[in-house]
Length: 179
Image (cartoon, rainbow, N blue to C red):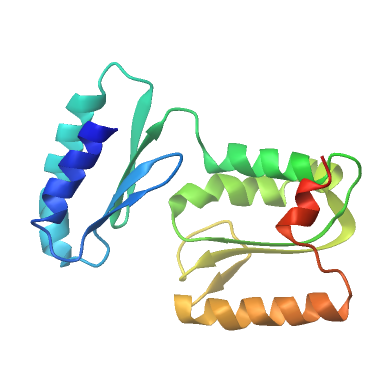
């Protein structure tokens, strides 16, 4: 990963609006804020350089609209969501509300899992309110879309208000107690 990071940083120095994001599970070159032509002009070069660096490792490259991400193989959103659902509902079906917001095609497998009969039977209460959502209107299996990012915070505030009215406030620390 240090070699990957140094390649990304070299391109960040040359592409205005681009930046590097380091997470526990991956490192990402983000060029969403760069001039479209400038970012896309270099992305194939970056991809080829990274491909040479990671050849023979258990690492993969994913890319989408405005980003290129390098991560260990096997780390997928759908696996993480299934693990999270398993953890939350280990003892009983306690999930009565879910809001999932994706923003690109990598969220499609998650939408399918959350909408599946298997997930309904295994994780969700019968009357679970599910809001499977995508950011911006695009072809998707999500049930809803949110026009732009500015609409997300007001929506989350409404969810919070309704949850408090129902007196069902759960925090992350509550979830960790379920183990």
